[in-house]
Image (cartoon, rainbow, N blue to C red; front, side):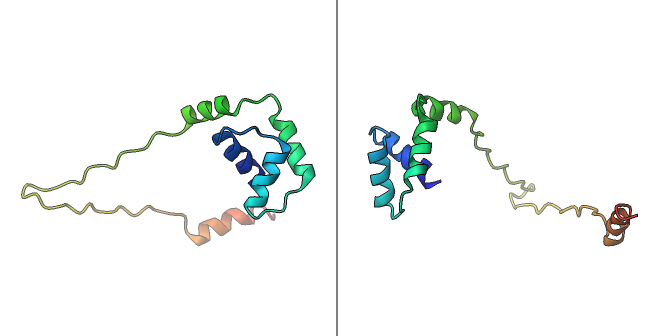
Length: 103
């Protein structure tokens, strides 16, 4: 993962993503770079425009969900909603289902 982060850092800095630059970034981060992994990452990024990929990834990001407003009674005090307990499967019912697996 450090190798990908290093490539993204070089991209963000506007530097070319090459073996020398990636090795320097990894070394500066305290990672002992493996030459084979560096070359494999560079080969997989060959011909890829990271700016376009990142721009497309931002369009797929989930929008932030706004918090629901708190409910208040007539006097303006906060109402506490009753929590409904979900009816779950008992341990016995779960064990019955497992017995069918073992004959």
